[in-house]
Image (cartoon, rainbow, N blue to C red; front, top):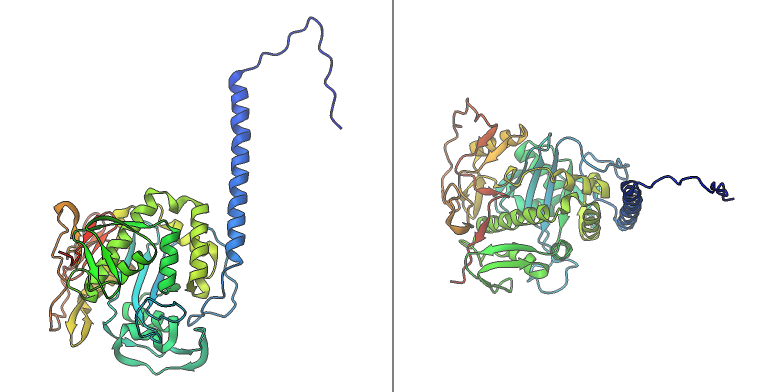
Length: 416
């Protein structure tokens, strides 16, 4: 029941109102409404996404159905393996033949430093010969059957997915790099299209136009905004860029991802929970996750951990290699230099050029843009590095190509 106001004395004075107090109360009440509304939107988004997340794939060492901690941001470092499957299964028409193939033609390892000061993404060439360890056999859903494949001393890395699913690719990269991988995710063609649409497209620079009949890609020179199928085909094309090799395609993918990071940061997407959960919902329904990553807060936490890392401290590199036979082989000593730096959470400086893309406006990229052309194994001795740079940055050997996310590079198209 409302309290009745006391009568005011006929000759008494009402207290004077301070206009700033009134404004302050208005602002405070408006802010409260805004915060409650934002919280409600986020809560709705989280609930909506969680209901759509399918059961994740079990990696070696994971327990099926094991509860995942409810976290909103990750603490410490993280290693995430991102796999792009070449399988056409369930993808519809328009992607060429080999519909039954299950190859990890894109394999990338994201490492986030313990203190979130830097991040590195390592791309592994699909035709690189590596040992494949004993992997669990999997059923049609990608889950272990309890049986194992024999270990193999030398196979192309992109065959690991066909031997034992995502878990086998994780084990293969762990053995190659010596890095423990906590999280893994896999995407197919339609998933890339859906994700590029969800983020609103990515603007990239083309030094020359791209014409690739094998992927139906036809793009003009200049700045181009890529989304949907154009984004997918840009990431897939190799005949349309650089020297037409898979190594040149890796450079194209790094160019795209660098532009993506810049776009996400400029739009403040990585600090906007509503945007992040919206994108996470698309990811949840278009990608396959390990049990450890099959949690919406974990996905968002990983993304948010990149928000405070400067773009020049987010580095994309190609695993060092040399041509051998019908593929490539690891440059062992240079790979050890790279992996040691990553394990120590060092920031990386790329001196070997981009490997295919062209610096915008004629800026130097610190090295050649040509992929490695050696046909013989390199020297096995590692360079003396007893005096690390004072800024805690490791200067990588010039056999390692790549760029950091602050560098604006242009795709070297073939449509001259």
